[in-house]
Length: 639
Image 1 (cartoon, rainbow, N blue to C red):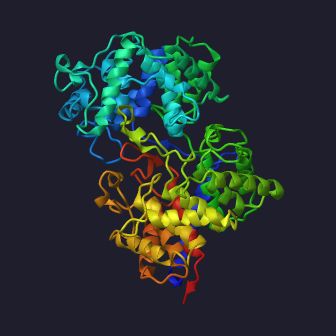
Image 2: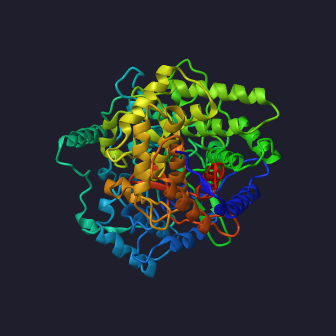
Image 3: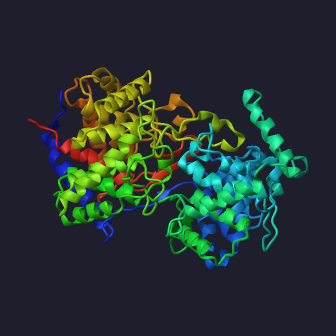
């Protein structure tokens, strides 16, 4: 049955939608786009402090304000968090501590005394992740001997080799290629004021064993290989070492945007600048100046605070705002939406990026996440942009149709062998790469996922677009196979099973309602089962580490909206006992909306790397609730 709404909800619903619309329209940029903060943990900002200290550009940026930011983010237990409310995380806390020391804060400062206790209790520097140790090694606070070796000659491997750099995910590739230079040269940069962090070694600095941790299983073969590489480095026996370094340098230079960005993400930008510093580039070189300016553009500065975003999301935010506003009743040819649509059209990427290495002979046509990122359009953004553009009416509809057709053709050819779509690449799924010591974040590959696959199928169904029947059926089969035993789907790019299940239900209900009737019913039943007593839904980031926590967490506006969107999609023509759940979820959104039309939430509901890096999109709590309310408004009225 199709769920219906009560007459009694109408006035509140109408008012809530109007308030939300007014808020979103009030924050649209004059150029037509929407863009809000993308928040992560403090390591991004801490590493920028280190970068400017290494380049000696710290006096030309308001880095002193970072101290206030870092202090504000320290929790009562003394540590800093990976995501809101996680109890503190070791590597994040070590990097925050490092940054405060670099900013001149004494180790005797009460905040750092408390932080030291937190860090030492959890194993100290020796238990941190590879990238934390790398940043410490750059300033002599850790020994390079304890970090993995990465032979730069991998840059020279022929395309037909079992492994090349293009078997790494786009984000790992953009961050790793410059680190081939850094890890080979093993620089230790001098600081104006010498620094050591000996107090953060639980075992005492004299007792540190600078070696890679063993797993006591077959993966220890990578440790043996690393030891061999280290011997070869010591005796200068690494083949094609200098040729590999030159190739890495060339690759980095070729992938810098005119704006100075690399890959649209801070890790790739920071690592590229570290590599060029290692190669003794001058700070006034235009490449360096552009790169430093690009990092400045990711900063958020207030009167007394300064912090760096890991990435920026204007294309993503704009496409979702378009969808929410049109669905909630704003005219498709409204001037604000026309301006946004034309802005999106201008952002279509017509250059050949890294994706073309495995997908030859295909015309480009996707969209990226950021303002400028020619090399890395992604499937998720592209599908959402197509849906957003399809909903607005532009002065040049012919141009819009051609842009959409070009994008859909590109998306179709990016389908992976198992039947799904990945975020950036084609068949980027060699999982063994996550097992190498360097890959301790387990984010070295970009396999197809249920959430991105669902987005592509939703695009086809919602916009009445076509791909070959073989592609569509293969994708549907992939989603069926990915469903968990309890009816849910994993969410790779949003937290977590609520996100994944909502997306798949939205897709299957449009593209295969009859074939997937059972799967849809099971997915909807799972969403209903994890609704909170307050009527909302929430899921902790900890569900990535412990699946028994799936669907559990404090209710948030964004996750409640996802659950409602999935349930309303599943309810169209499918009988299930979910009408009460939908009504209660809508009431939760209505009662938690602020007078200015916004919703507040502290939780991180976006995912960078599962288990290791999470995001808070500051507009998620605005446009997803509006979209949910709009879809509820468009349901038949119950007498």
